[in-house]
Image (cartoon, rainbow, N blue to C red; front, side):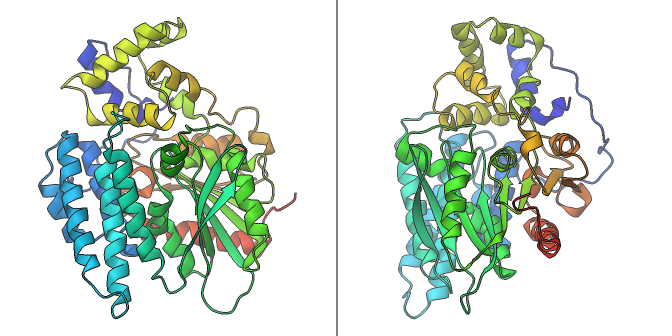
Length: 442
């Protein structure tokens, strides 16, 4: 078991006086040169890099992000909010002063950047679910994004689809030119990402290749969690099937050439849905996850596992909450629990961890028809090695495994920092699937 996948727990264990679990690694990467660190806090480094990573597709400007990062104190969540909120407000205010009729591209690009920075300002606030900034910042990012969306060469369109007891917010992006049926990429993020961010991570790159794009969010994800007060559900097919139904109605969509992409925790969600929704030609899991619950659970020390299995919710919650409040706890641990309890819509770490145990492909993986592209990040700070497990469970006949490497700058979780390279690899693979006819209906 790849215990390093949740390395942030190590600091937590030491804080409480537990011995840390043993660490083992299939690939020793210690001798490989590492990326320049953008913060002394590893988690802040990753999130700052995440903003820089969308610059190639007009989601950020490098100098702006680095300047904001320079004002952020490692481990200080309020400092992170302040740095990016100030930047977002400056960029947004400047964009509002530009005449959109005369300079539409300038307004569009600035509004896209402001939207990214408002989302970043929100990122570390979820430890207090009643913080009003969680909703106000989201309204600001959506407003900025919608302004930019309307100024694309082919304006994007927000649609609301009906799920099983919930609404599914989605954004449809069509390729320009004559209306004809084209391959289409449907995209979801994961544990914390938004559909707006997906445009810059993968959507714009797909459109450049003449693929239509639809992004969407389900329960637990940013918009649905805020507007409908719904946490994650394991039955992700209840989200995906209405999206596929919608695509079936569009004259621009080649319904035999629809790919389903899941990013980060979406690397579990997309394969899960494909076990039940067989109108999908291909699945792309960046990065692949077979059993999310076990990945988290395996990183806990035996004493906490025993406490969890005893069913003593109060005692378990007290242990976790004491660690969250400790000044010595790592950012990774604090944020992972904060975001988990928020996105799964429970104040209890015990209830959150209990829910996670259902997020496995055991018992349904044989229903995934394939083909599935399974990405793996060589230096993934959260789920190192998880993609290989999924690929092995699928087998060579259904999966294509690809490890994104540190030496290419692509070894971070979900390939953050290497979007151009990652998009090249996955979309070239999907082109090959289309040429072979996919697996639809088999």
